[in-house]
Amino acid sequence: MERREFIKNAGIVAAGSIVAPYILPSGSMFAKTTAGAAQHVVFVLFAGGVRQQESVLQRYLSDSQGLVGSAFEGNIMFNMLNGGPPSDKIVFGTDPSIGLPGTVPIPKILSSTLQSQGTFFPEVAAQGVGHYTGLNTLLTGVSTTTQGLRQKPMYPTIFEYARKYLDLPATKTWFIGNGIGNSIPLLNYSDHPDFGAKYGANFFAPSVTFGAQGETYIRNAKPYHPEEELSPMYKLQGFLNNTFALEQGIIGGVHNTEEEKYQIKLFIKDMFAKKDAGTIALPSVSDNSDLTTVGYGCEVMKAFTPTLTVINLSAVDGCHANFTGYLKSLHRADHAVGHIWNYIQTQIPSMSGKTAIIACPEHGRNLMGNTILDQNDWKAYDHSDANSTRVFSMMAGPSIPSNLSVGSAGTPIGDIRDCVLTVAELLGIKSQIQAAGYIPSGIVSMFDRI
Amino acid sequence: MKKISYLLLLFSFSLFFVGCNKEKKTQYGITQQNIYNSAHDKTKLKTDQQFISVLYSNLFQKNISQAKANAVEQLVRSIGDKSLAYELIVSDFMNDADIIIPDPSTMREDIPKFVDDTYSRFYLRQPSEAEKQYFINFIEVNPNITPELIYISFATSDEYFYY
Image (cartoon, rainbow over all chains, first blue to last red; front, side, top):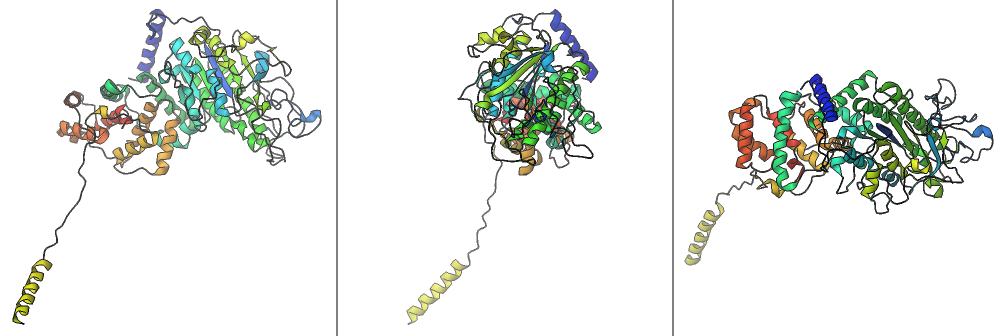
């Protein structure tokens, strides 16, 4: 099958799906969903442990390094939060050709901050202070002490809910990870018997998939002809699998159809070509792993226009040993979110104006520093105390109230477990997820908190 | 005294016969054995490391280096659809000049043998009659099918993930 023919066929299938009803696995003719406010949701796991003091509270060096004075206070998340930047000891930017490193802040991308464009929850409760626990909670809406670190989520993820209740193919849900460490690749579906791999999301860890390993072992994968070579190959594979499945059942893993696999293979080829040409959709500054991850995330969105895209950031976790590096990473994580939102609005017409964005850290960081000093003699921060459970969340997009702030440091409103039902409400599947019965009572969508 | 001399002579002769026995040469070797009677004997999922090692050995008839195995395993973990990841990796391996694979003409010269050999190579078992007949028919009626494509279908099939 040539690419043109594949696209034509895909178009016919898409058209058919509009005019002809189909029977879902549940046996019903149509998914029982209410129309969501958004056709696409991008959920940024603003992760790695973001200290409330340097983010929402905009204290820069005041509440961390004992520097006193307004010059050491200010906002370093220009795209997400309202507020002016600090004026002294600027270290979070890029390096000028002449002068001290980090002294050139990255220019703001968005003309209006996400805080202004949407609804902001400045004081939200995290569940636990571990990365995997936090990410798990963000994706399942459930926090449990029995969840193992090297274990797939015990409860269904938002990917599985979306695929099951919206009857989505695998290529319409994507999880873009910042790497393959810390069990990140396990988060694209749960072990839950009623959900699991068959409703899982596609996953890439771009630093590996398109990094040295991908360059060596898949870049030159033979481009077999889809009709003359791949089709008979898949037919044989199907025969072999059917024979084995008689007794054993099918193996796990996300399942893409042959057409989806072909589409993903073309995408991978395209990424290596774009990498060579220097045309990956990277932000204007792309000097850390989060920014590279986001560039490939934008490419995934452009190619597949997913209903749900989840992108994980984590570079701020360098704060365990280097506070200066943490400030740089936080500034870049904001740059990454600004780039995602701007790219969707300006480079993906089919998602522009129809996409909602949600951003939330998985947990915060400690109130008191540890004993490690960096190049500026600034203390580093771990995550283990009550301050580490203080985070924020925000959402913007269609039907989301703009310029609204809900709660404050004195009156915390919200829980990171709310994110699942918020995505669900935006996509029109909140009632099904609630009916499934795994989200704890008291957990609602952010809309319900307003 | 004479009796003793006879006995000594007899003893000397007996030493000659015993001492000059030709040493028996014993050789030990390995005969290729299929260890499974059917697919149903396989119940355990291979780990990624196991899968990669076995795959490489099957295709190249030699062991994979630890560094290479680690890199491939990391790559597999970075892609959500494992089947797709392995399909890409195997098709990339097919570019390697060291890969040991029959050429299409050899396959078509004796298709039943090729089918037996392929099942034995990848699944460590012989095909059932139904499986064998299906493959023979499929190869006969599909001129585009090559050992390479058949190897990919085996290497990415569900049974190959189990042991």
